[in-house]
Length: 269
Image (cartoon, rainbow, N blue to C red; front, top):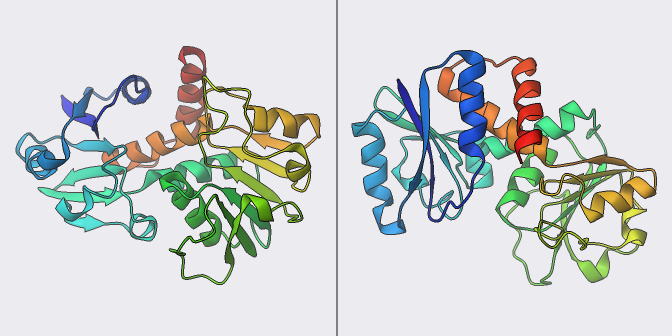
């Protein structure tokens, strides 16, 4: 039996156990996945416990994606760029940190055949999820990226001339190819809200919302009515989990597994 889990402060109803147990079932892995709710002052003890108890893999959620980093022995490049770790692998009694949100967003891009090369993107929101999205888009050769914040006095965390910070008041005349919502606006139960209005959405060809509940947010509904290409967040949720499993199992996981897990989670959420 191999042991895995989710590390956070208040985990509530997370679907991570359902996703990973489904992966275990499909791949015939004898594994258990548990929730680990801990306080911030105990993070150092958690790192030691992972080694002591031989817990092979751990996902990390808010608010510990940055706080856990000093306790790790190795941090992957994408996690360094994003300054956040959401997946830990125990290997040879060392803790390896990765950011699979980065790869999860890539799942949306790749499965929906969204072209990023030389495209103009706009990302709504500057929180933790935004960093993974922005880093992926920059790594995949967008020509320009507008990063939208409510505050005008945001200090850039990106050493890249393609990134321009603007406020919601300044985006009316920006036209581009891809617009991504990384804010919680439109998430259940407040499903009748959109982070931007129809006239803003109409300036873009592809809409991506990383929210997965509801499947089709108001933001995406508006885009669909305007005949835009729309992509929801469930693929990111499943994609990041599958990437975690690839690190833990040290193997490439077939897309058929992702498809089966996606279909299953789509029915249970």
